[in-house]
Image (cartoon, rainbow, N blue to C red):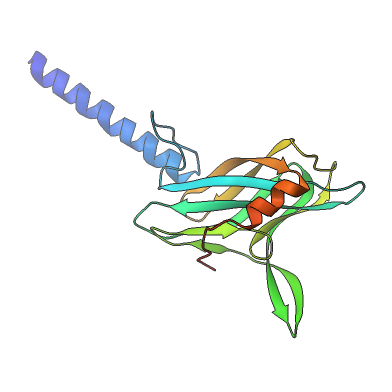
Length: 176
């Protein structure tokens, strides 16, 4: 009888533990497991940096690479940060020979692939900065994934000379 009781107790504990994991994933919580980093779905964000802003400039740009090691594609559908009044995802388009920025509602992160947010391509716009971005500063922004939920990322502000190195990144751009 004791064996049946222990087995039932173990099964109940396993069931509720599984529910907690599913619930956390469904509500966009980052699930931490020893030895793992990134989001539970296999999305990892790295190389997060921003451009330093001179003087009274009120807008800034931020960049990163999102790698999807999962078996299913995902999509970045939003971004937020306390650094600015408004935070948006943008891209550059060629409009009759003139490069223009446009807001985008989402960016695909394909299964087994990555998307690179970089100068001249997809990027985060920090509109109405509360203070200038100075070299060496750090700030956080929250990326919102369609399936993986919310993921807070630490960005490091790079100096002008450091940005040239970042722009020459060999990462290839995929996704829309």
